[in-house]
Structures are given as C-alpha cells and as structure tokens.
Image 1 (spheres, helix red, strand yellow):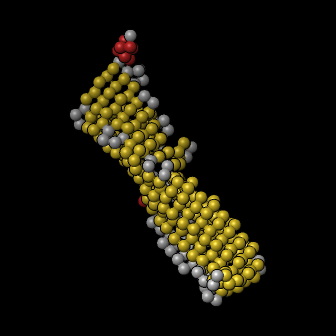
Image 2 (spheres, rainbow, N blue to C red; image 1 turned 45 degrees about the vertical axis):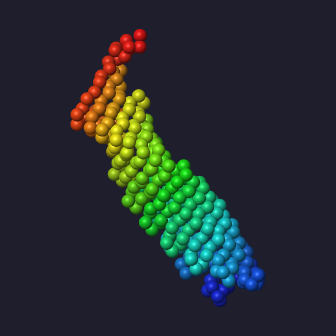
Image 3 (cartoon, rainbow, N blue to C red; image 1 turned 90 degrees about the vertical axis):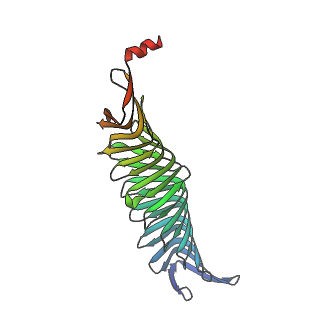
Amino acid sequence: MIFITLLLTITPFKADRVEIVNQNGERIVYLIGNVEIEQEKTRIKCLEAQLNETKDYVFLKDSVLIKDDNGEIKANNAIYFFGKKFSVLKGSVKLISENQIISADSLEYEGEKRIVKMFKNVILEDTKNKVSAYGEEGWYDLNAEYGSLRKGPGVKISREDKTPILITAKEFLLKNKENFCLGYDSVITVIDSITIYCDTLAYDFKKERGFMTRPFVVEKSNELKGINGEFGLRNKNVDYFKVSSGIARYCTNDGAHNIIEGENINILFQEGRAFKVKVSGNPRGKLYLKEQKENAKD
C-alpha cells in the first residue's frame, strides 16, 4: 500500500495504487483499492477515489465510509469538500450518531454545523425514545436533535409486546431532544382499535401524552369529537381521552346508544377499554334504548 501526504492540501492518504496527473490545469490524484484519507479528525474510506487537489474536493466510490468523533456515514458513492467539510452522498446512505440513525437514498451533510438534508425513502430512528419517523424529504440538526419530515411522512412509536402507535400527517416537526413531535394537517393516529383524526397533534414520548386540535376519535361504533383534546397512556395502554366543547356517541353493553354533550368530556379507560364517561359544564344528552331502536326500524 502506498502512503503519500499531499503538500498543498496537507491531506494524507493510503491506497493500493496511486496516479497523479495534471488535467485541464488541475492536479488530480487517482486512488485505487483500499483507499484511506484523513482530514484532522475526519477519516474517509472507500475502494476508489478521485482527489482534486486544486479545488480541494474528492469523489468517493464503492463502500464509502466517512467517520469522525460524532459518528459515521456509509454510502455507495459520495463527493466530499475538504474546506467546508460538506458531503453529498448517494446510494443506500446510512448516518449513525449518538441518538439517531438516518437512512435515505441520498443526503447532504454539513459537517461543521452537523445539519443533514435527506431525500427519498428517508427513515430517521430516534434510538433513545424507540421512535422511527419516515418520509420522502426532510432536514435534521444533529446537535439540536431537531428537524422536519415532509412528503408522505409518518411516525411509529414502539411499545413492548404491543403494536406500535402509528401517526401520519402532511408534515412533522421532530424535537427528539425534548422527546416530542408535532404533526400538522390531516393527522391520523392509530392506537390499537382507536383511530384519531385531527388538524394537529403534539405528542410527548416520555409522558405518553398527546394534545390535539379538532379531534375526532373513533373506536368501533363509538365516537368522540371536540374543539381541542388530550389523551394519555399509562404503561403503554390508553388511559384517558378528553375534549372541550365536545360530543360523545357510544354504545353500552346492553345495546343502548347514548349521545352526550358538554363543555368538557373525559372518557376513562381500564385494560384498554372505556369504562367511565365524565361530563362537566352544561352537560346534556340523549339515550336510545335497544328496544326503541329496533322498533324504530320496523
């Protein structure tokens, strides 16, 4: 293996074979086989590289690995600009840092600011909260653990021994350092047999609490809606739903159908099923007995 330090860029490298040529007034170094390049604390590996010493960048090809003290990025191909510590990576890209794993077809990485722009088949795993988010486009600040996903995005929240919570929206704002996500526009959340439709949703991963605007909650033949709402989980199971200026429609075990309205409606859950409804603030309602409903159909 050949080891050379370029005098102009002060960029040491290793490779099985090296060719240095002057091309169109630029000094180009071709590195072939087991390439290793270093820049301060950044270490680069690949199978082939084309280093432009004049313009201070390098093309990287096959089994690309860019690694520093903050983590590593793998890709099929990349271009890396030494002065800006900026890279464009393509093909099965995976970035691994302390609390995040990001996968995408391609991404752009600003090394000094640690900001990532991601494109196509994006998956962002928050390993601390056991949450994964996906979409077709987005950006993420690795220092602040803060970013956004767009174009068909969703969030999957893992629960031990239970199906994950699934959330989709037009756009997501991720605040993983604060254990928090925000879904905007046409939000749909699925928790076991419960489906929630709302305009916006803010969810706290640690406290297991969600806050909604204009929620419409459906569970089999039961419905709950209001102007604003809140729900909480306990030990990964639904604990309660609350709405303001709300209306609830639900069926009892004996087949009766109830409609209740009020300024505040609180539905409490036990072992995954609703067992108590509390209404305050000008409560009012209607009860349709099973027999009356059957007679009404005749």
